[in-house]
Image 1 (cartoon, rainbow, N blue to C red):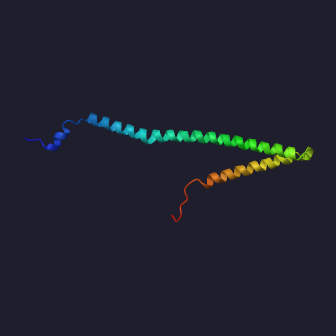
Image 2: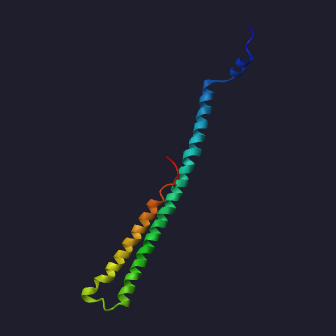
Image 3: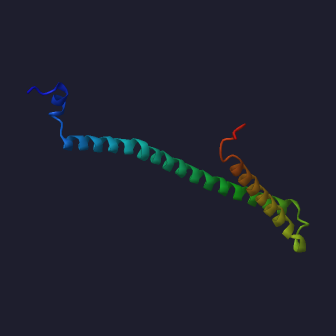
Length: 116
């Protein structure tokens, strides 16, 4: 009896070799599709966090400078009116915070027109 040609192709194949090949393919897929993007995400989060801290520190220093400028420029605000420069700086800080939050939440996702 003659063996069909397609069966001769399977003669050298083993189930163990197929599983090893499948494992290698899955390992490469996991590396390319998960580990690479996670490294990029980690870098993005690190630089974003550092930038946020530096912007926050700069905003604090700017508000402190405005406070000291108001106290220096208007010396008549001593005594019972000394709270006025602090109130102005608090209002400016709160306004900056509101602007930042509105900007963050207004650009959350892409805008779609005409989608139902």
